[in-house]
Structures are given as structure tokens and as C-alpha cells.
Image (cartoon, rainbow, N blue to C red; front, top):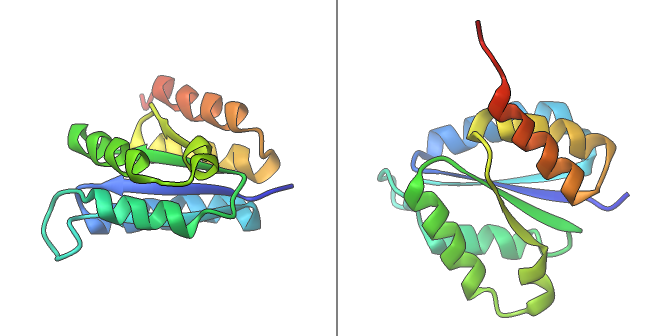
Length: 133
């Protein structure tokens, strides 16, 4: 099975690192995680260049799933994908429309068993319906 790449994009470097730590506990060796949190200089925010670097570091993965927290993290991720010069690498990138923590967690669990990108995205999306009461 080919490895799945997951990028966690958050306005907070600490949140991105924490989600990577949590989700990676469930995925074993089948998923490679990259945290892309903060602006790169310690401030809150997002950086398309940080996301682009993470994409390039995951170029050998079969697919690259990008999980975002808030609106501008999606914009930074879209910009990063647009900046990818190699068409095959760009085609591997998918922004997952799911809650950041739960979506990445559910996606990591599915990616531990399958490298089918649509199944992983579908499981991530199911996290939207998780009830906590």
C-alpha cells in the first residue's frame, strides 16, 4: 500500500502540531504527516509557502490530503496548490472539507487500512456528524 500524506493547516502552530500528534497515533506507518501551522515566524495565521513546502515534502505519497481550520487556511492551501508546478503533484492534492481535529483523526484511521483517497475523504467527512452528548 502506498503512503498517504496529510497536511494539517491551522492558524496556530501548536494546534497543527497537536493534531498531527493525535492523528498519527492512529495511523501507523501508512500516513506521513506534516504540520503547517502559523505564519512561520511565530505569529498566528497561515502561510501558503509553508503549505507549499509541506506538499513538496510529501511528493512521494500516493495522495496528499489537506485539513484546514478556518477560512484563510483554506485560501492559503488553495494558493499553495496553485503554486505547485508539477501537474502530477498538483493532482495528488485534496483539500478535505471536514472538521480539523475529528476529520484528520477519522481520515488517519481509514488511511491506516486503505490508500483509497475517496474512502479516506469520505471517512473524514463522517466526522462532521459526530455527536458529543
